[in-house]
Structure formats: structure tokens, C-alpha cells
Length: 242
Image 1: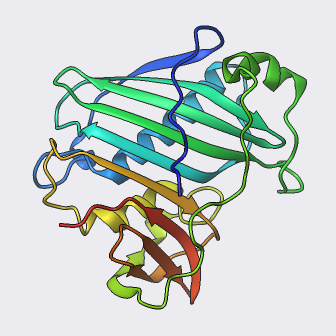
Image 2: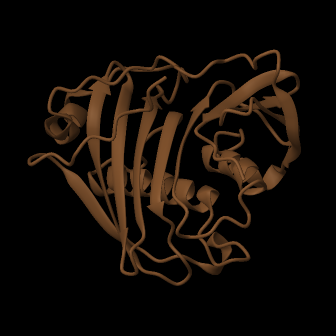
């Protein structure tokens, strides 16, 4: 199963750049910036880009898929620069590529699939001509699709890896667990992971959930299934073993 493609930055079209500086709450005990913090940076940059482009408020967008490839993790207090652009569009969806570079050698590439919702009907809605005028050029005709690729059902030999509890503090204004909070599930496994140890992991979000207990199943091949109330709410592929 291929991961979402990490396309190169286009020569034309809109790209948004901002500085990023890790805060104390972004790093774990080793000083390495956590995956959930990186996912939050990506989410916030997407929001800031839309506001900067003139959408304020930018409307409801939901993450369907996110790949994070870390060649080297940032460490507190390394300064970084983030650049993001639209790398594909489809009916009601847009793919966003983001690159981060740190002054001490941190390097991260990501690709996220976002679904745009009608703010009234709360259902996927087509992009406006104004949106396409701003972001369509950078996409360069590349299509983005909502199809999910990860196995949605744990295999028979999957074993319980851990228990996890989503908190009320993990909810966002959409009143469900924010996408960035799901990456904290992996940080329980990778807490002692060093900054120089690369990872390439992708998540797919399948169902929304609220605060409460969750179970994490593993297949021994880098796959993880996060279950809440007996339903799969998210899947990971590419999780390294320790």
C-alpha cells in the first residue's frame, strides 16, 4: 500500500511561509519535539494560510489523511521555517503539502488531505471559484481523492498494544477529538525515540470520537488501529518497532 505522495514544491502558485519555534509543551523528556506537536503545527499553518489568503473565518475543514515523514526531529529550542502549499484538489477536498526546515538540521515533509464542509449543512461542499483562483495554480492539475487506503479492519492476528484515554482537553471547536491528538497515541510507544531516528507514518481518520477510553491494536508490521466504543476511529501505517 503506497503512502500519499510527497510532491515537490511547484514553481508557480501560492505558497505560505512562517517561522516556527518549539515551545516547552511541544517537547518530550528527551527534548525531541513530539509527533502530536508537529501535527498541530501543520494544522495551525493550514489555518493561518487560509486566513492570510482572505478567508476569515476560513470555514470548517476536516483532516482525512496525514502523512508525516521526519528525516530529523526538531529539538527544543531549534528554530524552524515552515512552507505550505496546495498540492492537489478534487470535489470538496484539497491536499496540502508542508515542508519544515530547522536551523540545526531538522527536516520534515508532510502531505494532508483536507475535506471542506458546508458550514450550514455540515456536509462536503465544492470549492468556490475564489478558492480555486487562489490555490488551484499550485495544484498544477493534480487530483486529490477522498478514498481511504489503509486496511479498515484489524487482521485476526492483531494484538492489543496499549490502552489510551482521550481527554476533554483533546476536543476542538467541532466537538470531537482533534486530529493532532491522535498522534499522542504513538508517543506512548516512541517516548525514548531520538531526534536523529527517522520515521515515516501515515494516519487515516475514519470516524469522529469524543473523550473516553480507546484501545490500540497492532499487527507487528507497523499497522495500528485505534478503537473507541468498539469502532475503528483511526488507522496508522509505518509505525516503527522498538
